[in-house]
Image: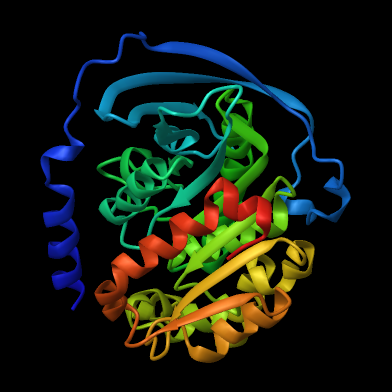
Length: 338
């Protein structure tokens, strides 16, 4: 099923629509973003706090992909310095709706990818969001894509849960800077920022909502809480568990370490914001109880249950695209519609 899903998405994205219509007239440029802590920064868990500072970014326009969408590459330094130099630069793709400007500012959304690092699905949602008038910034998380050296074995989700905590913490801090960059854009409404993530990206997106007060909305596809249990039971992470136990680690230690980055633990911070959860009824990766754990911790926001399992949701991809784009659209956000 997973291979079928990827084949379908590849076919969709192989359409001529993703080729530039014309070269972007603007040259690559650098700029400075001033980061200021949110007014209610005190609610942010200490590990995710950032002081006031400035950071530099570089943007490289790729051109107009359609009549209403332009894409550019964006890079800025991570707030976290790791021993792996390539991981210390955050790489993003910015999908800009051409109809948005300073007088008609668009909502802005951070988009996060899946565990496997297949970026096509995230790009599909970015395209759909931008076509419907929402600016989308696809953020590549730590140790993914250009952030991983070819000879490096380090991953964001590691056999050592302590490294996983480090990676997830860095991802959230990167997202905080990404939100500041997105909110600084003249065509983006800084008071209408949100996050969308899929599977691992949904979990990180949920965690980011609890740590970044500027993220006022979140659509989470295939996400859940109690992530220690998710990691301990997920079929994809069997190697992670085996390496941990072979080194003498216990299940209780594993769960306790991951509790420090569990979005359900901090979810009360995001209560009252607009949240939509899209989940699978028979998810074999995110246990049903873990989905309910996050849903209850968030205050029981709207949740949609799709038939099938984690990878079977690909059958409902167009429904998910439609629900997601409508959720973030300006008119729906202003009216509080889901």
